[in-house]
Length: 206
Length: 195
Image 1 (spheres, rainbow over the protein chains, first blue to last red):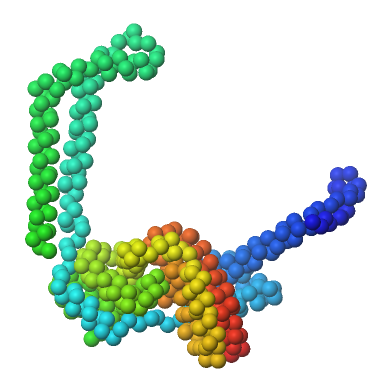
Image 2: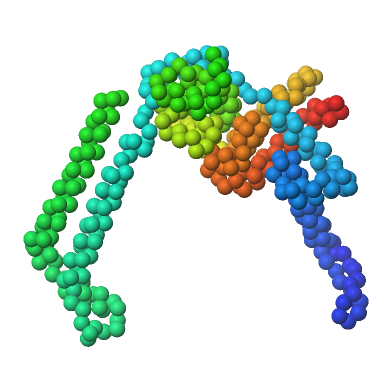
């Protein structure tokens, strides 16, 4: 390891101090700074070449290219690379390619747009089904809970008490709950029927 | 065969039942699609098979093209996803999509270059060979930008990335391409520069 010794003047006291620093560190720092600057120049020049620079940036870069030799050389280097990339030719498939594709598509029809067979009503129906179910259970559960003023401040105890107070047996035996569940089951079966009919039709078409 | 119709006009007529007009779309984009696929799938036979599949898929889902983007952007999205699916099906290492091709391949190509060093390469052939040495991702970014006539936003849609990320990727891809050309085609590059 090599150390570099140098003198530094303290701004506040004006005294000279002897300092030393690892030589490798300095070189590394210099190298990183150089890389950063070069990367930055390249990025700005690529933007300029691609026409992605703002009006201000464009004029700044133009001036730098005119006045700074490093920028000028880099610009010409990148411009050459850009022109080379633009000059590439596309690969060509075999002569029969288009004919093969046309023969293949002759077997098919254009499928209906996804919009038409994904019926929004069905999506809303399914969503509504679950929301009604959740809301229903919540309403029944809350209506069965007796909130009292004597409740202790402990939230967990309150919660446990509330859950214990729900008479599950009554909920599932009441006429209203049974009707509610019945409607949901019928709705569910209807949706299943629609789904299976569509699948059958698609299978027939294929 | 060419009627001078725009993509949108052709599509609306194909959707009305004029299936034969789709041939124009195929002819218009076959080289772009084939090149893009070839950047990911190395063999020409596989690339042709995948490209054919892309055009069939595009035809079948033509009704889904809503004209919110350019038709080419929509088609290249199908091309990219189909190529990735093909690679997965072939059980190729999918991570290689992001990595450069294996050292062995580059070595083989390098020995090929040495053997043909006397042969003068045309500009585009040289650049194409250098592009082939890049990772499929880098090669696709460069092809989309320079040959696919796609903006950064459109490329972002195809690649599923933010336009800024695409810009960074493009810068890096160009840098790597430049390095490859300097490494393997320094002689030709110097000649071009001397023109």
